[in-house]
Amino acid sequence: MSQPITALVIMGVAGCGKSSVSEALCLLSGATAIEGDTFHPAANIEKMSAGIPLDDNDRAGWLDSLCDELRRVDATGQRPVLTCSALKRSYRERLRSALPGLGFVFLELTPAVAAERVAHRPGHFMPSTLIDSQFATLESPIGEPLTLALDASTQSVQHLAALANAWWQEHGLKCPV
Figure 1 (cartoon, rainbow, N blue to C red):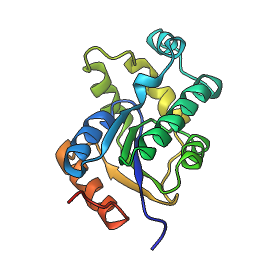
Figure 2: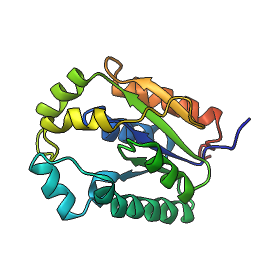
Figure 3: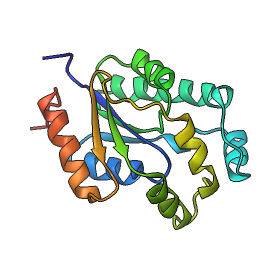
């Protein structure tokens, strides 16, 4: 067996269900949710709200903050589950360097489904006009170590969370007694 998974990143483009799946997974596993969007600096939120895609420089400080939070939560003995788009392999490698045993659950869906979901998501700063840029930036993690890909287009949040939880248990999650 490969290295045990001690923490997870729920990843994918906007609208794939990261936050919902993370919440359901944390209920099943007793893990601690880290909502990646809350770590964006105001400048990033303003840029996305204006329909301007983030670039590597915009994401650098945000990724550093997420690495710090992963380490902080892990150091308390909790099992972190981070929501983060993690669109590029270099972003995922940066997160992996912060915490050994970090697994990734990739929620795959089509651009059309993502755009539909984002267009009907109330109160979020990410407009549906940025969906194409997210897919253009996405480097699929399929084939990377400690990575599970799930079809998020048609499966329910509860089913996705159950699949992620079962995979995590197979690969190292120790449930509380």
